[in-house]
Image 1 (cartoon, rainbow, N blue to C red):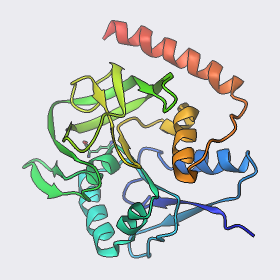
Image 2: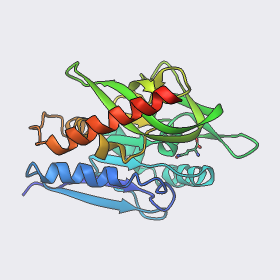
Image 3: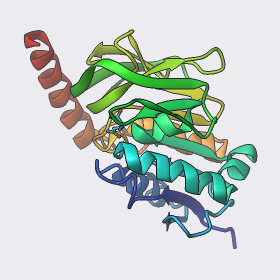
Image 4: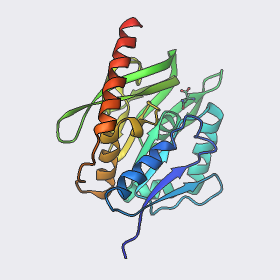
Length: 243
Ligand code: GLN
């Protein structure tokens, strides 16, 4: 019997306030719908993080929780091991920031060392980015796909030479109001949109699964989601024009 694919949801008690746990459910469900056995493993600080996961997920959270999450993940060490052996990390907002080199927290903008899995740095921005975001993402097959979500972050993120932008902003702030959104470095992907973003953007979910499994997956019927996406993109564009 083949082992189920393990989707590891990391520290929801710290990085779980924006509903990003839905990303884990979407990944599992899209595997099950294709007849691929998948298991959702949730770990909290103090639990041993498994090193056998195929996809690890970090979500959004508050400044203090970010500091705590970094401390526990460094003490545990297994996330680094898993990424080193080819697992995918999908990190949203606070999770994205802590995956980087450094980020700042609190009123005094204390600089905290991140996990160093992405060549990005985060500092307090010139404004708080709050609202719907619409970006253009180039799929691995070269076809452009729109990503929608909502962003809510005070930190602005700058990419170093080791990371490439995940997408380009049509509406919203993204990394640092510089036209870029998110970062990719190997199989580590960071991004700002919540939603959960993988529920809103199933092509991105399938991309993560294909990265993890290292093979192409058959498409799933998406009519309902496609119509919802059409309506949402139109709504964001209408709103964006009024900003
Ligand atoms: N505390 C971080 C910031 O404000 C992350 C916020 C979040 O995860 N939404 O930039």
